[in-house]
Amino acid sequence: TTFIPCGAKLPIIALITAALFHGAWWVAPSAYFVGMASIIISGIMLKKTKPFEGEVAPFVMELPAYHWPTVSSILRSMWERGWSFIKKAGTIILISSIVIWAGSVFGWTDGKFGFNADLELADSILGKIGNGVKWIFAPLGFGDATATVATVMGLVAKEEVVGVFGVLDFQGLGSQLAGYSFLLFNLLCAPCFAAIGAIKREMNNAKWTWAAVGYQCAFAYSVSLIVYQVGCAFTGRLNVVGLIAAIALLAFICYMLFRKPRVKVQ
Image: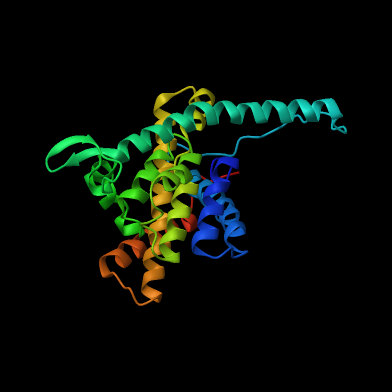
């Protein structure tokens, strides 16, 4: 499951931990615990919905014979994984970084479109895009063009979340609470395009693939909203509408967790 942080998400954890939490030890473990809790909660809730309800099907997994790995197999595995990352870094990540840079230096100055190395983010192509959709993430605490662009680019490759902040200024996450909300959303939301492609191959159904992606995004949004809005209530930055929405989502999740299934599970 993509709820568990993969290697591509580790730089996001490291960035938020170092930049906003001064290297606090608990941030990284909490990301894994949140991922595991999300798997359990999602499994229970989805089991009580119509497409997944019913009797539990027997599950048998045939495990291979375990043995000590050989030096050659270890080196081969290291080479394959390393070369895979080099190819990814030299194609997807490099191209995405170039696109981000170009989008930040091309824009409108005095009503004229062109190149400007000192262009303000709000006047650039990237800024226009980010400002156009940042309202979606404002209830989560990171309604800023830079953080929004980083989140959207994370759908291409999770490494690009850090890449965006590397090209642009690290801004938009002014508080630890907003930073943790940003971290949770990017850990739990839809994975990168490569992982979505793997989901498509496994499910062999475009409808279920998009349903899985939509559920992950909605679940990530709900968790981040609850954490940020409840946190704001306890830190003196109460947003009544946001808190009501967070309580409503939390109540719905609790209802789905403890509701009796429609069909008795044997």
